Amino acid sequence: MASPFLNMLSYWFFFFAGVVMFFSLFLSTGPFSGGWTAYPPLSALPQASSGSGAGMTLWIVSLVLFVVSVLLGGINYIATILNLRTKGMSLWRMPLTIWAFLITAILGLLSFPVLASGFFLIMFDRSLGTSFYLSEIFIGGQALDHVGGSPILYQHLFWFLGHPEVYIIILPAMGLVSGSTFGTLPQADLWIQGHGVLSCWPLVSFPLSYGRTTCLCLGLTHSFPTSS
Image (cartoon, rainbow, N blue to C red; front, side, top):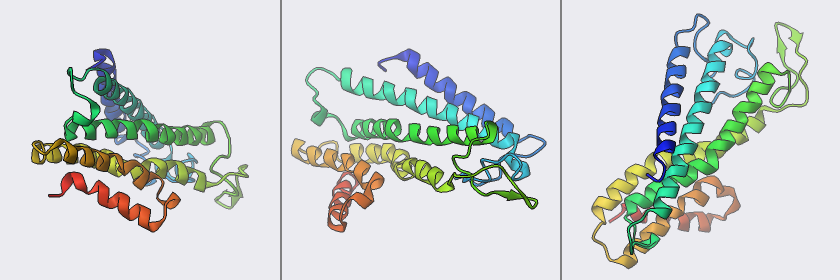
């Protein structure tokens, strides 16, 4: 790796994220109970439910540590692939496995910080009395002093990661399968399949920006790396 130090930091941030998440399961008030998407107001109000208190706070801390780990690892992967290739190996001569790792790292760098910003706004609503996600909330018949916010804002921030996340999970495995299956293909075929891997970001992140025909073409192109 280009930076062993960043590699170490990425591992330890990931490790402590797991420790914090595991510890939150054993709190007396219970772990976070707002679902895997953590939509407000359950996540933005400590008094919303028993699982919205300390369990939610530790859940956010754990995921923020995980995001830091992803960013450090992604920077290290990108720097390694761009700067430490062997002599004579251009980007278009790289194995499809390495292409998949590179695109996965880029997807993580572009999408995970957006999710982290959404978590920070949740913490502001929980701790500082802001109203980014809250408006006209009633608990036990009493109106809370929150106006002007909208939980839809959190949904936009969350799903900016949620769509690319599918490819962040599957691309490394697809790269391994493609590299072992198509490792001896001519250079022109590898070039086409490399573009197929690249097509995943606009396809999953900005589908509404394209017409149906364009999305279909991008989808078919992206299927090349794992088709015979």
